[in-house]
Length: 355
Image (tube, rainbow, N blue to C red; front, side, top):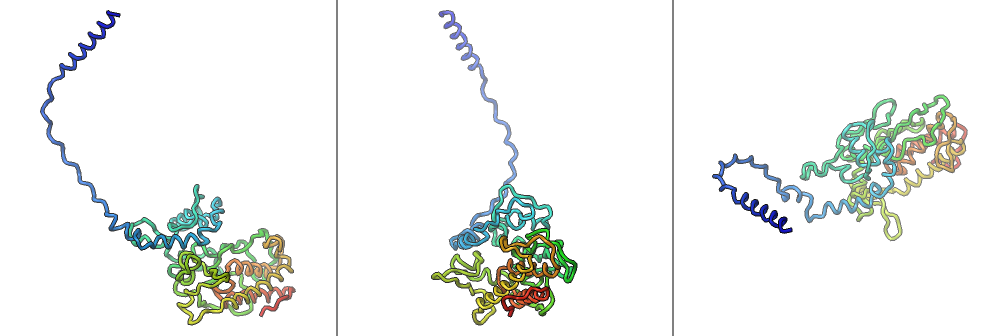
């Protein structure tokens, strides 16, 4: 043990001696070259506060939006289908805008509902330009009319039409053509053909009453004029975009957009009741013809006269438009009246008077 202690003592002394042998510090070397000055950052007060300020503008729009069908609906439920992501997810719509086509849109891993970034160029310039729309240009509709492309170009409503338009029906029956086999019980224009009705261009028109070539509700900004009119709280108008709201247990119409053109409030109820009655008439005829399945509210897979299938497509299109005539009153009435008359000609009388 004494020898071990002597060994450690010797090693410690050697270490001290070696450490103490370090020489003095040499002279300082020359200074290095100065680095390049960085770019000054942008003062947040010059950018962020353009939007993020005590005006509560963003909070207001978000509150309205949170009550909208775009925000609360089940539209993201179809986010796992390549044919649906263009309109049912924010990522899909922006990819469609960037590519100009929905042919190669990918299915997002984490699908988002339609939101502020879908329609506005948020945090692109960090200025008020960020409120600009992501798709401001004209839209060539998916569904052709008389064999030609249909272009929708009406101000800020172009943004809406990227999705709110009829889908293709292919194959489709031809007027007075050969018998047509319905192979898909969901045959139709899909759920949101509003743009086609605003333009008065549904390609399944049957002859009879003359179809009007103009629409007073197309307006100078299309959908925007009425659906984004001055809001009623968070229940209608503004970024909630609805047209009706509940007040003391009764449904009211947000007429703020109407009064930009009308001197008095239009009689929506009479028009919608009339169109609804006409649709009931046509539905009864389609049921009698065997093409309408009352248990599923879909088409029956079978073979029918071409004009009967056209009448079914017109019925479905008006139903999916959801305005019950408001989007284009005279055109929609003519479309349904001519379908009813054609069904009478096919041997299916109108149970409820068409007029």
